[in-house]
Length: 86
Length: 112
Image 1: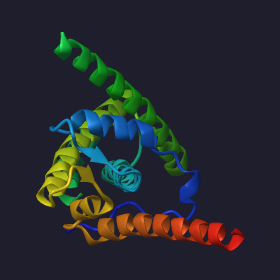
Image 2: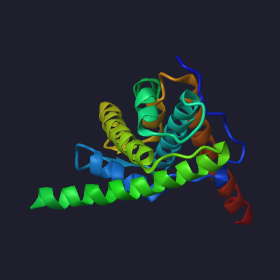
Image 3: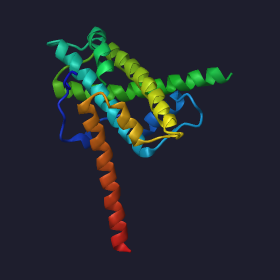
């Protein structure tokens, strides 16, 4: 169980995140059954999960490469474990 | 015909997701003083789309298992069952929202 590479930030409110409406739209598109819906609170919670996923991906990729631009291969290196951990 | 419209919708949603992830990457780039190539952002957007797809199907399974057609916060918490830190983060989000609702309910009652 790998520890989170990302440190938690105090000022979470001002951070960028995936717009809840967009996420809701995407999730409804990807549900396998027409009648499946999601509550607003669950959508919010899911938005939090995805934000963690994105930032953790960046944090782990940045950890692997000491300096310079983050590139696709950096993501490829950390993606499998990330998906397993989260 | 329906498949084509569906594909186009997915492309638009993917593009919107890509844009939004780009913003998060920009923010992190500033915070970490590290840049990312556009290809990195594209690859990350693909990764996130796939993750959302897997997660959506899991959430749907959880809610159907509980004989519901609507995904709730309990289902989202179940997603995080394997990772203590992640579970704590999501629980915090859910609890904060519950507290916020309770607070505004209390305010409403006080006025009446």
